[in-house]
Image 1: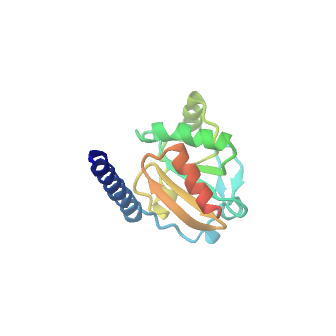
Image 2: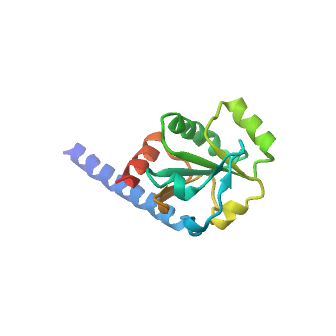
Image 3: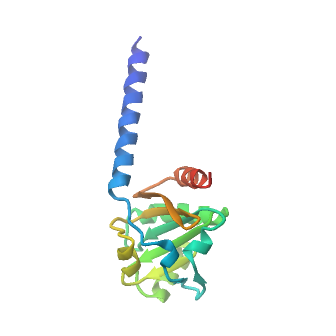
Length: 165
C-alpha cells in the first residue's frame, strides 16, 4: 500500500518538474530573426555557411555557448560527441575572444564541432539569446525547438529526433 502512495507522489513530482522545465523553456525562448533573411555565417576555419541550407534536409542543432560559461563546460563535450556521431551541429561562441584564442581553447579540449565566433555578441543579441548555453533546433529554415541550460545527450538526441518527424 505504501509503494502505491510513493509511486503516485513520484508521478506527481515528475509531472510538476516537467511542467516547470517546459515553462522555463517557453519563458526563455529566443526570438530569432527570419532565418531566410540571415546573411551567411563565417566559421572560424573561413568556410561560409547558411542556416537555411544546413537545416534543409535534416534538423540543425545550433548551440549558443561561451568559453567563460560554467555550464557550457559540461555541455560542450556532449555537443562535440553529437557532432562526431553525425548530428547536424553548428555552434555560436558568444564573446569568447578572437578566433585564435577561441580555436586554441577548443583544440586544448579536443572539440571539433564547427563554430562561428560571435566576438561582440551581435548575433546572439539578434536572436535574443539571454542565457548560455542555449540550444536551438532548426529544420527546413524554421525554429522548431529551443532549450537553455544543461541538457543531456539523450535529451538533445530526442529533441533532434522529434524535429525530424
